Amino acid sequence: YSSIRFSRSQQMGYDIPVPDGEYTVRLHFAEVWFGATGGGSGGVGSRVFDVRIEGQLVEDNLDVFAEVGADAELVQTHTVQVSGGVLDIDFSSLGSDGGTRHPIINAIEVLGSGNSSIFPTVNAGDNQTVTLPTDTIVLSGAGNDPDGGEIRYEWSQQSGPSIATLSNVMTPNLTATGLVEGDYVFRLTVTDDEDDMAYAEVRVTVSPQQTQVPDQLWLEAECAIVGSNWNIINDETTSGGQYLLSPTGNNFNSAPSSAESHVSFNFAVEAGTYKLFALVDTPNGDNDSFWVRANGGTWLKWNYILGDGSFNWRQLHDRERRTVFVTLDLNEGLNTIDFAHREQGVGLDKIFITKTTDVPSGLGGNDFNCGQANKNEIGNTGTSVGVTNENLNPVSRSNTISENLISGLNLYPNPSSDVVYISFSNDDSVIEAITIHDFGGRLVGRFDGMKTKMGNALHHLSVSGLRKGIYLLSVTTETGAISRHKLVVQKD
Image 1: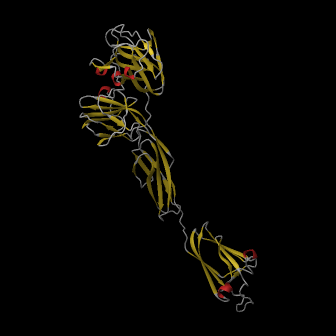
Image 2: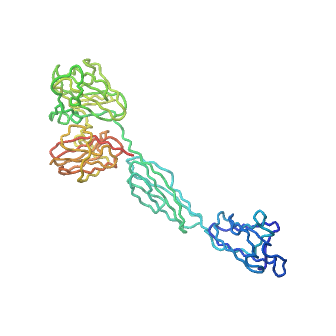
Image 3: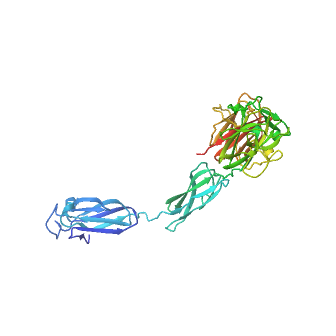
């Protein structure tokens, strides 16, 4: 070696700028003084020092003479990881480090290129919200390679209530379709020309469709929950071709407690004060009354309902006072109005509930609760729901919403968030159609011409595309028999 460095202060060091990464450091030593030609006397223990690289002790109490003698080369090799852009090498022969005299170094080799690349940057954009029925969103991301190289994009879905359909996944702008209610997380990964990667994520919240709750409803009596004591009478001149006739006998003093003597209308409206009209036939003064209540409250005697031997619209009044009309305070969402048998032979065809100033006439407007699109003249504007057949065993029953004219029909699980099974047993009837209405009266699913024989089959119905809420499901057979059920769709 042509030169040597030492330090009279017993400390010295090097700060060598290098890119971060892994390096091989070779330290070259030669004792050219103690015991060397032209040097001074000395030997083992004359020079002792420590070496630290990147703060780590790599040589502890190094004695070059003891290792190789004088006038000889000693090379010590170490592998180190550099961070911060500087390779730090420190020497010390301080007594506190166990050293003596001056530390020395003859040469330093630094081998390796480190990792000079810088990771790319990526931005997936801000979190977003969409509201059904919109089920598509475009996400705009961005990426950059600080080294100036080319980058590649790739989008992927990390989570969500369903698997969305993704397009343009290898571009900055992703299109996701087929979204349903819930939260999705999408990830944008950027890879540079040195295969260094970075990613960012964005959350998409899909909100349910905002269905306006009605402020008035028309409800057919025969499509309510009809107690078995009541009679359903076929009459083409009435609304829907049927009406209800109160049972024999009278309950003058109080409403009957048995649900078999009740007719219950379940419906959803916005909160407020409502007027109640009913299309009724009160033949005479001995057959002209009902008991009426809302949401399980006190029964009201509705007596002396004016009649002329045919069906007429009458507004709910207080007891025998025909000019003192009674209003009902209804809740936001689901409500129930019950009619109970008071006098025999009274006809009930339809009811009209309204917050408006509208007054019913004729057969009234399109009914909500029967769920027959051809009668209500509502189109299929809702979600498509799939129906298939499977052979499974039923496990539970649903809530029946009207008289069940189809024997052995079961609907389960109910409530459900994904799949509902409709099962039949010991019945050779043929399914003509299945319909689903929401509580705003909108037809959200209709399946015509199925011509499926019931038998012991199970029909698999997907409701994952329906938003959280209460629905009316109707099954119609080839002979015209109808079974109606309340279907509750839940979302986690």
